[in-house]
Image (cartoon, rainbow, N blue to C red; front, side, top):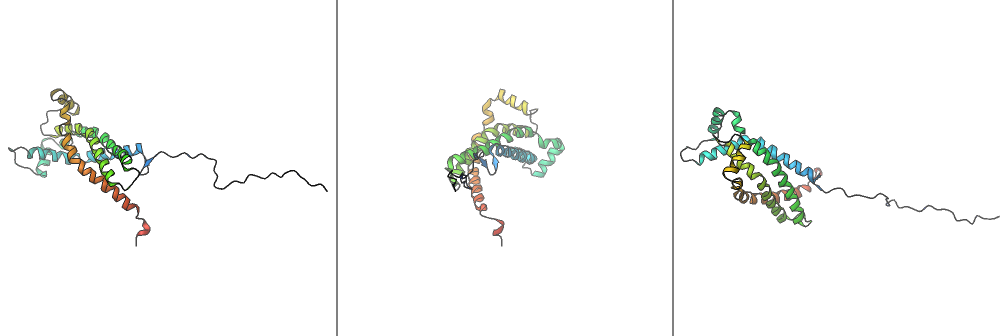
Length: 222
């Protein structure tokens, strides 16, 4: 009886680990967000923060201005608030808020984006590099202060009692014509010197706290 000498077809064995799909790496994220989402979140947070606290900032600005005048006795928060409400109404607490709104959003977007970029560049892949986090914070505040300082100057001039300016546009135009562009950055150097150490400590502590909390899970509780 003849036997079939033709070779039997045997399927090529495939490994369960073999995949034909081509994997594509997702875009880099920062704490679960894409970079542009991180910028928008920071921008919104900064705008809401400054605009929500604007009446308090107006009180502070008025008190500082009055405190610098020797002809006027120091006044407290209640006196300053009462004077504004009596002479200008509630709208007096929000005079100049649009200047802050225009500056706070872009400034905070720059603040967080510059920090993330510098952190990635300086840390060398080491998440425990506190020095890199501190330096990145300094770069972030230098960049963001360059954006917000001009609008902060406009805001302060509008906040003052009997301000001669009609609004943001009028203030910007008159300052440019009468004092030049340098007037918008008169306080920039002082602002950076004041904010840089704070930001360095802030971000170094922030990153260290994040690393510490990553090791805590609900199972760790008693």
